[in-house]
Every structure is written in C-alpha cells, then in structure tokens.
Image (cartoon, rainbow, N blue to C red; front, side, top):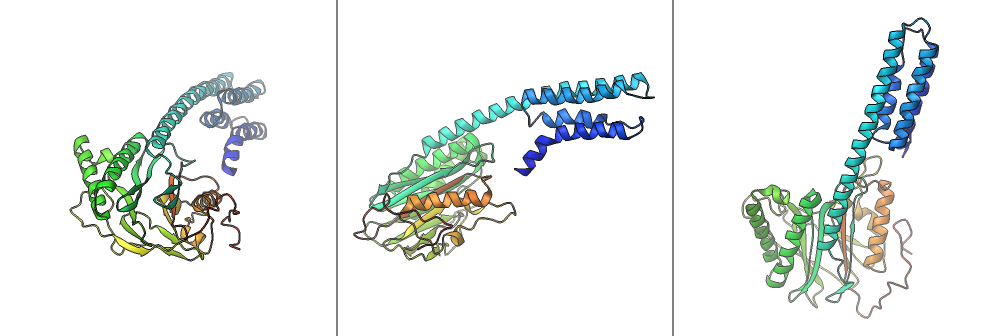
Length: 373
C-alpha cells in the first residue's frame, strides 16, 4: 500500500522538485527531464483524465521557465516546451494502450474463472456419511486464474477424492483441469484400487498430450493427491503424486502430517513407469482431513516467510469443515496482507463421531488467532 501511494504521488513530486530546481539553479541547468518523466510515470497507473492533467501541469511548469528564462536562447526554451508536449501526448497514448490491455486481461480472467467454476462444482455437504467442504480462492495479485482442482465422489469402494494443481494459468490450465476431473470421475467408479485410479489419470494425460502434440497441451505435469475412505473403516488410503502433504486434525487438537512413505513424481511427467503405492493412516471418529494446493503453503508475508498450515492449525479445534476453511482462508489473508500471488484450493473431510449432532449452525467458530477453549 505504501508503494502505491508513493507511485501516485511521484508525478506531482517530480514537477514540484523540477520547479524548485529551475528557480534555485543557474539557467544553464534544466529540469525538463523531470517534467517529461512525470506524465510517463502517470500513464500506466493513472486514469486518462489524471494523465492529461499531469501533462498539462508539466507543460505549465515549462511555460513558467519560458516566461522567466533569463539568458537562455529562445530556441532552447521552445525546444524544451515541445519536448514536454511530445512526451505528454505519448503518455496519453500509452495510457490508452494500458487501459485496453487491462480490459482484455480482465475479460480473459473472467472467462477463465467462469470456466473453472463450471468444471469444479461445489461438492455436497455430506458424501458417503462424511462431512465435506471445499473452497477455491483465486489470487488477488495475478493476471490469470490457475489450475487448482478438487473432486469428491461416493463409489462402491468408498469416498474417493482428488486435489491437484496444474502447472499453468488461464484457459489452458482450465482445459487440463477438465481432463483430470473427467478422468478421475470415471476411474473412481470403475477402478478397484486407488493405485489404479492414479494410473488411469496418467493414461488420460498421455492421450491428451499425444492428441495435442506435446506435454505443453497440459502444462507439462500436474501434482495431485488421491484419497480413499472405505465405508465403515476408520482409515484413509492416500496416493501422493508430488503434491503438498495432507493434514489429519484430531478432535483433541493433535495434528499429523500425512507424508508418503515413498515420494513419487507428479502426473504427466512421462519419465518412465513408476508403480504407485497407497499409504494408509487411521482416520478416527471426529478426525478431519485437510487437502490443499501450494497456494496455501507457499503464501508469503511481507518478510517473505511462507505460511505453515501445520503450525497454524496444531492445537486448534473447529466445529466442522466449513468453519475450518473459513478460519484458514482468513488467516492466510492476514498473513499475506491480502496480496496472494497464486490460486488456492482447499478440501476438508470430517469423519463424524458416532452419535455426534450436526453443530455447524450452533457452535461458535474458533479462529486461528483465538484460544481453543
């Protein structure tokens, strides 16, 4: 915010300093470069009207020098006036180009965001007896929507889900998301194992890459984590393909980082056949699984410190998955000052305690900055 205020004040400051320089130095010295720079600085940041006003102010400053030019030849003063006039006109042209470019970028972003919402429908609040909540948070400081994705479905093998991140931006990333989500929904219903689902995603990406003539069609690779929660079993199986590690929040505030036993490459890297291995963890009643993309774990504050979700969540209690995601997104905004540079997908899944009532509308939300009690 301080930088923005400085940039907006800089054109006026340069004109004022230029006038003082002309009056306090011998006539052979000139402040014309300062007067010429003022409208150029204003062009990409100010409105058209403000840019024109800065240009007029710079011209008036030079006109004062023309009227009180002292011993300088008239041709020099006229040349300086024409220089500032030319630069001011150029600044107006630049302002128009920048405004049109911004409008096109805004339009492209709206289209990409709309397409992303279409391929990422919000999951139901309850799926297969589990409480579910999901969020897609677009970056405030980026030009294009990213390729973060999530999907949850109930299958004969239990509730299966995927959370991933396409390496790319804009409509190309949305296309890759659609490919992964479509392949996942089909594979989740048909494959008997979670490893089989991961291999189906690999094949789908390979087919699309071959059809479009190269890996660039799907931005090279996709980090993803797949999970399976069997019906009636207090456990979760996870296949992690180069994605940030999920978290398991226990109902007493304890937290586990679900790191894979064997690290694996992201999907779509085409570096040979790598057998997938699903790891298993206990998922007790009242436990919450949190899946997220690197827009969360790589969010930085003004000092460049990364956001650490495990550290921020350890020891905290939340009445439900929706409250967890609300507190988490608010805390990330506080950490970054609202200037996130990457999109963020969040998915929380809760295994309700037996006999536990739905308290989502009756229990006070515990924010990350409050005590657990």
